[in-house]
Image 1: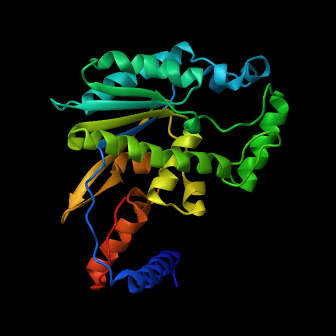
Image 2 (image 1 turned 45 degrees about the horizontal axis):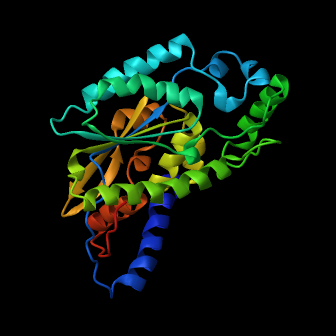
Length: 285
């Protein structure tokens, strides 16, 4: 049996089990909290990206952007403005408390008027993976080399976090994001005009996507970090009264992800149901 066929059959069996336990309950459609887009953005090039020795004397969270990083952020601001061009567009910004993400945000904000920005919120749970305090360059380089063999998700830095720790805190942020969006919906904001922009770090960005789309650890390990200031866009899709967020094709390819990683797992199950004739509740993310 091929690996892909095994994966498909595994999902179908799990869905049959779920459906058999829940098919006696009527699905109640909830108001849609989903925005038009969720756009994730890695910060611009930092001094640490350019020179690992910067971490020896400067705390990671105080590492600034390079001049190139500021130029990258300004270009991304222009691209962001071109993407969010609807007449009644509204934007919610979230950003990591690290200096390099705040400096990146500073280059984005001038492209939007005060009336377009609903809020701009600092969120510590989307900060960089902790790998230690003031760092010994060679020890960190050795640890990163070891991590590439061990796997990014489970590898724990001797004085810091594993990828799993970052995954857990990013996972706890998502319900906060959903509650924030639902508050705007209940206050009368048209969610089809809302864009969420999250300025974060490469690993945290991928782990956000992993949690949202419910990737396996193996899928995550096969993915790659986005480039500095690369926009990664999730668009709202609608079908038969349901909606979900879907990763743009170009971004999926840039992150080295398979087709299945672009939509939430329960949407894939629903699509398999449509092909196979199975019936079950569809509760998209």
